[in-house]
Image (cartoon, rainbow, N blue to C red; front, side, top):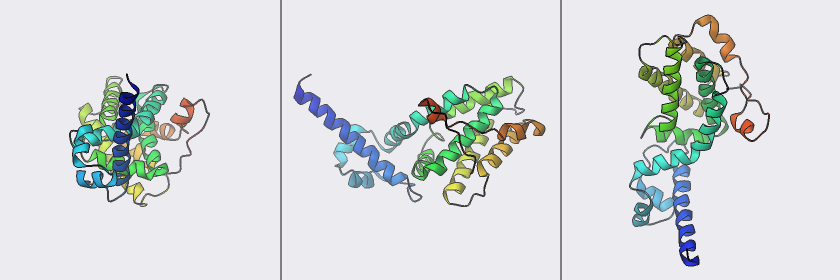
Length: 220
C-alpha cells in the first residue's frame, strides 16, 4: 500500500470514529432518544454524503456504536460469568454488572437505553448470551418457566426499566440487588436459595481481565 493510500485509510478511520464519538455524545444523555442523522452530521461535523460513505443509515450506525461501547465490557462480563457454578449465579451477576456499570458511567447507561429502543436490548450479543443462560438454567432445573424467550424478555425488559430509574436518580440503595432478587423469583428460583446468590460480592470483570483483583462495591 502506498503512503498516500495508507494516509487516506487512516483519515477514513478517523472520520468514522468521529461519527461514532459524536453519536455517543448525543445518545449518551437523557434527551438522546430519537437522534437524527442531521444532528449527528452537525456534531461530527461532516456532510450527509460523507455519513453515508461510512454507514447505510441510523440503524447501521447505532449497531456499530453499540458494539464499540459495549464489546470489551461484554467480553469481560462473559469471561467472569463462565467462572460461576450455576445459571442462577450467572443471571444475578449479569444483572448487577449492567446496572452498576450504568451508575458508574451514566453516559454509557443512557446510550445503551437509547440504542436499545432501536434494536435488540443491550445488543445482539447480550440477547444471545441471556437466552443461552436461561435455556441452560431451564435444562438444569434451576429455572421454572415455560419458555426461554419469555424469560429473556422479562429479564432484559426489567433491567432496562431499572437502569432508567437509576439514571434518573430515583433508585433506592441496594437497587440492583433488589432487581436481581425479584427477577430470580420470576424465573422460578426457590426463594430460600436467592439470598445467598445475591449476597455475593462480585469481582470487577474488567479489573480481573487486566490482572487486577478489584471487587465490585454493591451500593446501587
